[in-house]
Image (tube, rainbow, N blue to C red):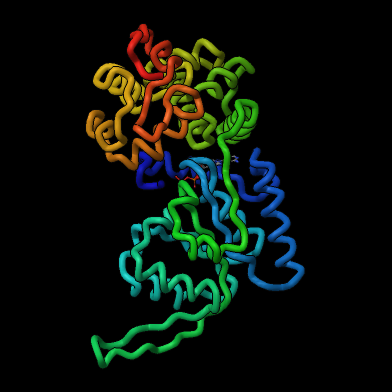
Length: 334
Ligand code: ATP
């Protein structure tokens, strides 16, 4: 998912890193995953073993990378970060695996996008902590077994359903990250504002939280945009009016829809009379990859009751017409 998100500038990246919670206690929300994870980690500490492999699923920006860092920190282990798209050959994976140190945490983002041969190598590595390195080609090829130190794999995927069963089954624990409530996002914002030494009124926090689509990464990004706006306009304290003026300027609307979300809805209602229309057709209409529409825009639009997924395709829900200020025609499907 990381590569689907816009690439942040270096300063943004530094800020994002600075705002990352460093341990489970600082991690806001996701009560269930936090409890489950804390038990898994406590148990492995007692057993003196590396923790079971962990799979984390959920939309981008909800804290999968952050949790992987926390797992490593809580296990007092080093962390290696890579991603499915970066591992195209089994050899790429072998190189990473064979250089892991004992107990190391290996974070593989977008694990569902790994190549097939790499995936098969990973099965064995996860289960038996060994891999077979194939040397030579054709009839003369031989497999040289290579022992690996015990390690903990933390896999991240936008949807657990995208993973083949055999891979999914090899994780000891799967945590499903949910969108955050507005109240939880406010907590994320208060923590970040404290670290950035920003002054906001309660209504100012609420205004940003309401537009953050239940996603901490977005909340932090909007907070930085509002901070810029307040700085340039010489505002010392950020109230609801300042926050809303700033976010209006960045085209983040009151429900948190951004330009992509609105263009998906707009295409759906104006080009396809509200649908149903297939994902790839819809993606072409907005000039995006189907995966971007499906993983970045849709989860939020579905949750907000603006878009529906039906066997025959995507449809605009009545709320979508209303949100766009349009009248729903009598012959529309939803
Ligand atoms: P992706 O899958 O796109 O990499 P992600 O789910 O891994 O996304 P992170 O990079 O972990 O998301 O988090 C994004 C930002 O949100 C981080 O800067 C982090 O500071 C903040 N954040 C995420 N979760 C929390 C949380 N529970 N409490 C406070 N801040 C959080």
